[in-house]
Image (tube, rainbow, N blue to C red; front, side, top):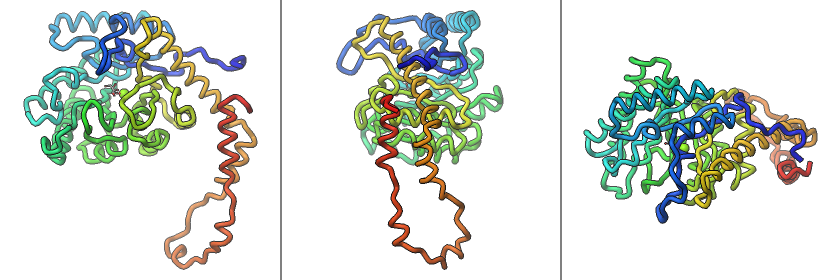
Length: 382
Ligand code: XLS
Ligand code: MG
């Protein structure tokens, strides 16, 4: 079946993985690690060997918090050497402002201004490190910035703090690395009961209130959207429409559950297909980054099966996008449904227009047929 499909990843596919996805040892809230740890430098090399274009990281994935400057410089040097020798880039360097207990009640929205300042310092540290590694994006996922006890934070105040911190980071970037960009990755909850700015739409609204909205984009994550029971295709579409898609975190998730972070495409094939359709047919030139982790039943080898599987599913769906575009029956239906689209006249003309509701109601929209064709295309029956 895969005869004519080209499923071998190429650098030009611009696939990416978070270092943390492979470094994941299978720990969950109820169980200990099931895999031995792996060194981030080895992850960089192994990803490169599999033709992965780039990696994403938190500064702390490479340099644990509390490391000396000497150790930090050594690790960054080692990473750079491997990146050059094995031809792999770093395309996002954020900061882990969620694991350390100092962030137990938030980082950029802690009630304590010193914790907020410390979090800003950590992001600056990440931006400096990213720049040295040739990266130009700092994506902020502020997982601890939320609450469980509603009265514990004033939500309007928290938004003000987020804005203040984002503006400080922009100021730093503009002064030191004008070509650096920043982005927000939204998530509805987990690890907090509620996280501030729970969806990409919220993040886009917030970005418009910053001092330099043009420096900020968004990184939607499919699983985060589905955790909220929303439509990931529409979320990505809105980011594209706003010209703000800085990156994307591809993965999978059963809706309305805890953060499952499973291999791309496994739980939501049709939605995944339409996300690939959007990415492949738009002017998006960023990375296709996988942010998920191997099941905790896997050992270290299983992690590489997981890496291969993510990319293979994407490439298969990309082939399906081509088939969808070349399927004359599907395209005929699409033209029929959408062909009548035209710009609406002036409001005064609309206000006085006569509409034949019987005629409008009578038109048949063959969505049953269309949907079945899409299903059969995805199942390989067309
Ligand atoms: C967690 C997030 C996280 C970010 C990186 O749910 O997806 O992994 O992508 O900080
Ligand atoms: Mg993510």
